[in-house]
Amino acid sequence: MSRTIRELLTEAIAHLDAMHRHLERGVVDDETVADAVSLRLAAMIETLHRGGAELTTDLFGDEWMVIWGMRNRIAHGYAWIDIDTVRVTVEDDLPTVEAALRALNAQFEGRRPQEPS
Image (cartoon, rainbow, N blue to C red; front, side, top):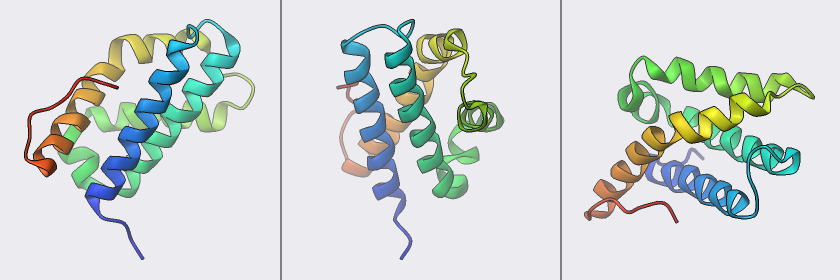
């Protein structure tokens, strides 16, 4: 049984929320925090990928390939995930992605977007 866009969106946001909880306990420069953040980031991207165009290219346009590329770096980088790349992604790139997901979720729920948990 395939999952609905709304279910996948809810899962993606749950990964973001977990990632924020990891960041509350430390900074991305800490290897353990970077690993936890990377795992959640890759899981969130995988979840969006399962939603097809509605959660990928329709929502992010050409940027989707860059987002998917980050997932590939994490998934295939094995022991060589660059902590600096993860930090820059979280600090500079993720806020835009997260805002788009929360706005879409708010549309599904018929309300205004919320800030991250």
